[in-house]
Image 1 (cartoon, rainbow, N blue to C red):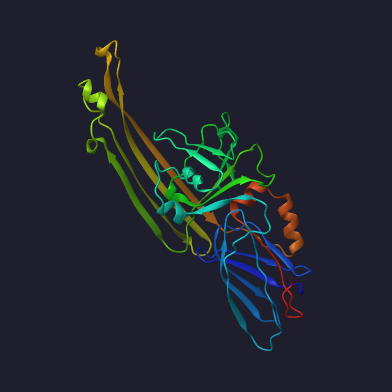
Image 2 (spheres, rainbow, N blue to C red; image 1 turned 90 degrees about the horizontal axis):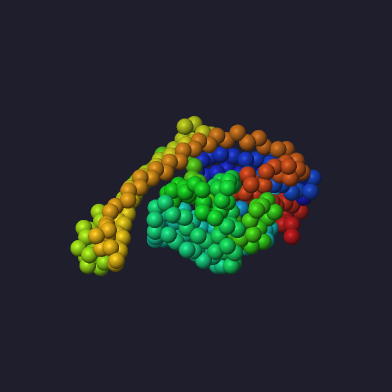
Length: 345
């Protein structure tokens, strides 16, 4: 094991960098990384430089990355294509992570990303069709009030009702980068939850200007009239639904400062019909209108300071807020054997 190896993790999309230096035992750790694709570089004077490309970081996971540095007479760089980590051996969490591609490609009933938790074993969703309703999730037989919702690691439960009514803030599907669903054996950092923990990570801007636009609509005129409405001779409720919006993000200062904006508005016209068999004259049909705005804006600046040794990083992690660490993504843990040229088991 060789101390003093400079380890740098660079986000491919944003250019943000985090660095660490191996300790006397050749170990290192980089905490607080956002989910994404990284290039990890190992450098030391007099040794070959090893560059690992395509390292995928997922929310809540710890990625172990090893490197072998050999003595080099001249400047030499070895590029390694990273392989996907199928099992996170550093965590006992039971659950799964859904990506932005999953949320985009799979159909949804009411455009609420929380319902996608039903794809994880042990989760039974109870969807609602109303725009102002809350979707219930029953995880491993627990009541919905025993769950905990989070956005970027921060609590997203109602201060009074907790998670009984679902997530307090409904982030638009287009603004979600990853959605982590933990069903059992999660860390003690998640208090006040005996059911499941659901953590949504929002998107951020990148070095490229990117955007998207969408519109979804329904109209009751395309459907047949309700049987009871037709029998009572009432007018068809003018029911309709339309959801439209956009996302937009890009750099303010390349490789340093980025912005992201998400806007969604929904116009929900719900048809209401009531029938009274004993007082037919009181039967009626009407329309209830709901206009909902969902706006998200964020700016990210890379102000992180790299710590000198692995021991310092581990000490900082113990004193940091666990929720913030979970929100940022995962950590690197590994060690380098630079003297013998063999990988440490």
